[in-house]
Length: 261
Image 1: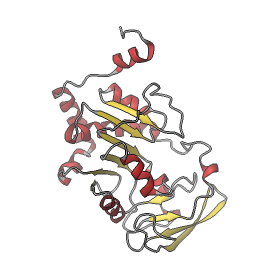
Image 2: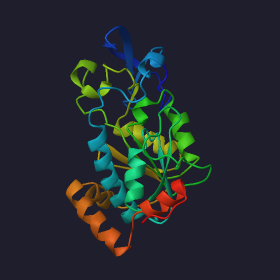
Image 3: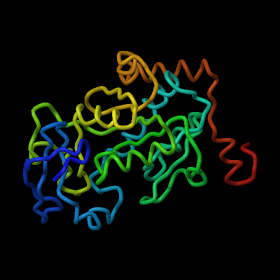
Image 4: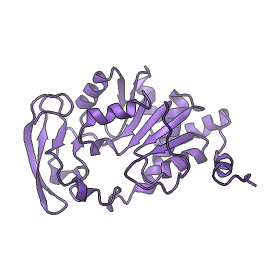
């Protein structure tokens, strides 16, 4: 197979059983260290539930991501602009962000919108797109990233990078063998190539959180803001400084036509 990131030849890397019954092949690119599966013929079954049953950390993760994203936005972007959560799942993240005063919208064609009804994305440009736990699901990463960039040239996203020791599928939970939805696993080198393809810079904490952007920012400051305790204090201080107020009253009026009393 050709590498989905750099188009070089890949080599068979490992085999594993997903969904407890399909024996599949993983391929690894010796040039950019990207790991991909064979063509995912099992996807229809894997996505019977768009959000898999083993994702028990969903609520806590959204709270964490809301804090980190607010700190990133307040530090590096126009906090009064519009924002997009791409692949926004149940809409919990969007609701948390709007509650905190950030004008977020949701886009997800596969999952029901439970928490942010009335705030689906419009066809327009956004200051920043967030894409959390999404890149590893992409069968054709370059094409999918290009779609996100149609909405914003700034993408703040999460995906676990392959550890330096390059674990086998049975040695690392992030392969997602139980649900079969993770088909693309990235390395720092593959993220650098993605950024180069789109004429962007990439900033990363070299593990989970990454930013694609045309902006030039300090890698040190980016990583500093991503430290949870610092992000929590920073978002509190900057929200107070910028007088950020919740959008709940406005959202209530939009949904009901009645004032928030």
